[in-house]
Length: 404
Picture: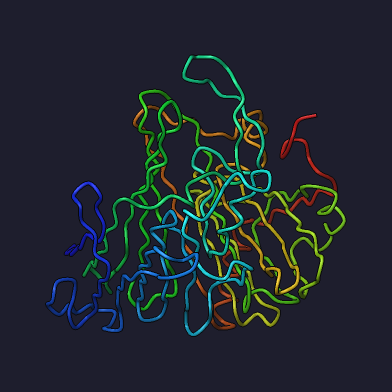
């Protein structure tokens, strides 16, 4: 494999490029780079200026069919993309990327994370995710005490200290970006996330690989959830979710009331109250699974692929409120369900990583822009069940939430 790389940010070496462009004509360092998949690829890095976006770095990776905006300033989150002419995004009341310096995680009772929430992919973790609340920790004096956790943790609001873009010439050619983000403090969690987004030239898919390393000399707890969020044109009245679910369980009374339509979506409705469903998914012999979201006509869809051995818990968030309020659904593979950390710990769903150990995750987003592509993806998802029937519970189940 022939790989060419360029470092855009490296705080340890004092490296920072405000702007950068690479493409077939000028390559990564001024010389042409021809890839078998075609010449319509590019990598661009540029800053945002003004308002709450001031100081945000954007790395736009385009393979000729799929363009994606990566935000190193916001924990290597994915803001939005375009694939085969289709917008891959959702419309949040928070219109533009928000610099983390303007996000106060503790405001509104620990819900401040939502003041920056508008991305296609927001990571929730690394030390914790789920709703705000109290956890029990051991402090610097070796005593058990309580600590306040905010909504969905810190990683989405931490900037990368190292960013590198690359081009691989093998096969059709692959381009991408790697970033390193630290979530660390004295007498507290010490995590390093190395995240790589890559895509082959001409592909309608992107892959995100995260390597989560415990930097401490003692074991550490990990919770990680991938909050993928989608709106139009994939979400509309009649959109259907196709999943290889072994079990589906409603989170609360609101979800119970709509359990008969857990896999379908409505038009926007003012005042809609969010519904969440916990799921266990079937995988193949290697643990690989796939979920599909398809529009009402079945001619536009998207799928997520991941491994249930890495991300065994799957949450569906239905938030079909008025367009102006944020019409969106979340497809959320995770190491745990987004319950309070104390609940997930009691169920054994908080991952313990040894000193210096690394936990790896991989997710792939694929866009299906035609009826035939959607049909093929649906067949693949349904095949994962192997003839098994989905058990849909009509009441919340103790094993998915607080015991007792």
